[in-house]
Image (cartoon, rainbow, N blue to C red):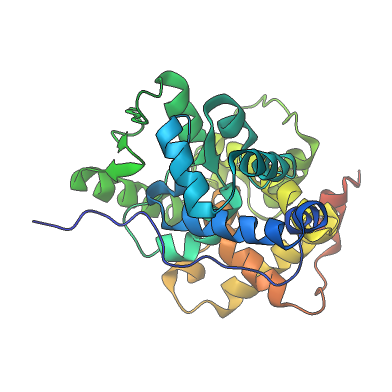
Length: 303
């Protein structure tokens, strides 16, 4: 009998530079705040699918015991982590679910070697939003995935299909033309990402254009969260991340990087490694002036 796919981890990256969340927790709660942050990340990392629902009283008490604090302290510090964007606001406020998108992003290099990928924030919101939590059991139909007590069972054929679809999206460029009239993205930062990508790679070569545009919005959300954690301006961060992507592609020793295309989907798929690479740089390398202009919203009207 084949082993079930592993959807938890034995480690999580812990950057030594203080981010917004750690600074606020330490300021408000001292060393207890740092300990709480670490315990929450450890628990989420080791829990299948990296999320915990404490809508049920018994499971909530179990979480308090595992993390090592009283209920009022637990809720106060979770509220702080939600306010800084470290934990999902929608999942906590609506469903009492602890989920850290940045944690899952940081584990991408691990999951890139696995057939089974963890559920996304959007999938979890949809799943908990369509089914009531009863005795801490949630059954949702998300890509034929059954979630029971945070454990996931995926048919092997489905996992293989998902892997094939991901490979096709990354390695195959289609010639489908974008619609003649395409509405501008409402999120200005997402629109800047879109412009930066199309300056290098035509939208017709993105493969799934709709998915690519949605990933521009995803990148805007990720960039804002990373900016809050690092206290680095969004434009400066974006420049560093684009430079890191180019460096990783240039040095790439595997097909995962050699075949990487500068598209929103390719960028999101490699987000964690890009962030790691950017963090290693002591000085920010130069990038093209055209890319800087797009990211800063300075659109030159040259004919």
